[in-house]
Length: 121
Ligand SMILES: [Zn+2]
Image (cartoon, rainbow, N blue to C red; front, side, top):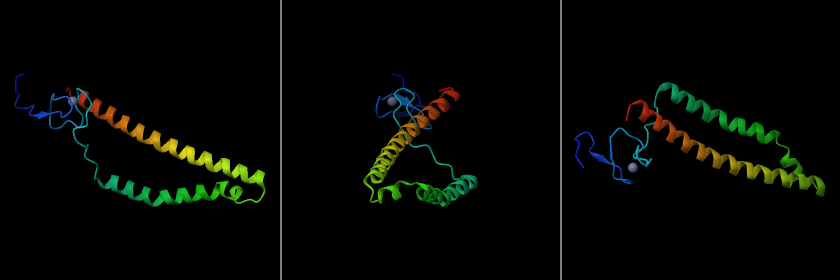
């Protein structure tokens, strides 16, 4: 293979030449390095505001969620509803976390791929 001075980086997975500005290998999709995170004032304001608001939103929802009240009841029928509510909450949480991870990974991959395509690589 001819050596090109512009293509000095090699993908660790498929050993194809890659440009240093690539975040993912265009040949095999191997992650080369992480995309830099935005540090603009707007991004910072959004992150800090979200960090402050998030626990408040969680608190409001947990407060309104009747599962705790039902679970603490001495009536077995009411308690069963509480058990089911807890089980569904746990299942839903795992489900949401799983899909959030998968979705974030695929979104990042497709965004990087489209950036590479737009730049004509
Ligand atoms: Zn590769």
